[in-house]
Image (cartoon, rainbow over all chains, first blue to last red; front, side):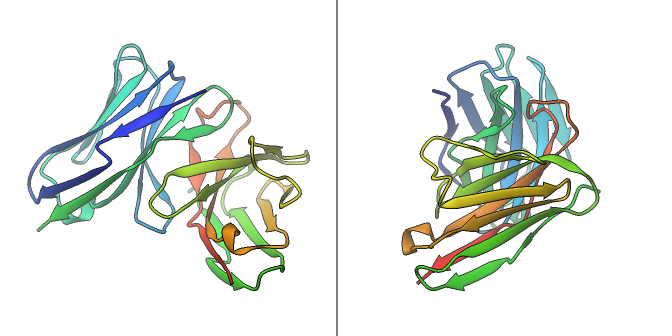
Length: 110
Length: 119
């Protein structure tokens, strides 16, 4: 069965620090999506990665997908309180749906 | 563009009653919509995939008679929780997918979610 693991599960950083969240799949992915969720709210689409080795950036957030398409990392540079929330990776398994990781709860201390 | 709405945002009901949750794509046509459930401090769990004009495909362990899904048009899918019980209390999120390319490579657009509390 498909497994998608995120690490760390929880992260507390000082404002201005950099951080990285990882998402690892047990199988090769067709695509990998990153979302941000504020607790109890809907998801905000951040980025989608499809090709091995692909890297995308949006403002201070950069996401990469490894060559084997089994691992992705989300990197935030100079974190701000507005970055706080739950980050979820979603994997396209090729079955026309998304399988989500366990989530990473990010707290940014001003 | 690509806005998805859900209604209601919150609902409290008595045990044994049925609750209907609507998911609408406001500015695009969604041939496929997905329903997810999220327990506190946990990730999203896919419940079912809904295709316009056909029966929904339920994930293993999800009771189709309990969670009725109707995708009557290209902009509307409904989830009805029948005979709701306290264990059905959860956060339900829908997503809508543009296009007909198949696979989830078309970005899914998520609704704001519906919080259900069954007393």
